[in-house]
Length: 160
Image (cartoon, rainbow, N blue to C red; front, side, top):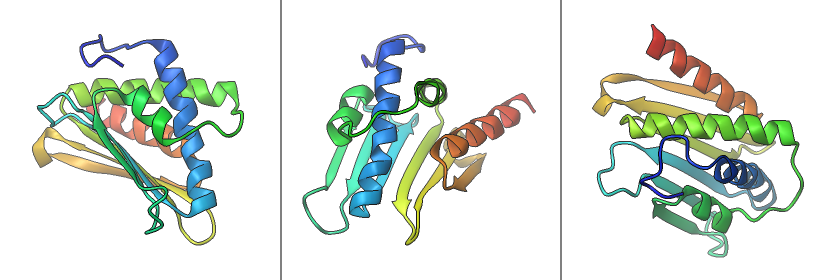
């Protein structure tokens, strides 16, 4: 996505990005890797997005990119392996689009995906205003549930 694009970005880019973010779960499950996806609104260099895969020392899966092109980074890092539910893709794309808008307002949002020994686990953190804003953290074993709940809590805090 073009870093100078409006806050909406291209809907097709967000849908494509959501498909690849969902594919990250399969990589974590299969390789027991750790994934970090971060939208960093405190960066001044335009490279707002970080996509990182720690392959647990195997060297094959290690990947890190700090970029202004989120769709490009997630498509390189997480190849599509299976089909995903279209409604799940659309809901995740909507949350990612919100994350982008919040990052543009200066907030830092991150998604960690990791194997906890039994299941693939998801953890979201949201912080901002240079440490003044109280951190939001949501964890769970269902990606979409964790993403939606973190967005709900964040929006409630913004409205409150």
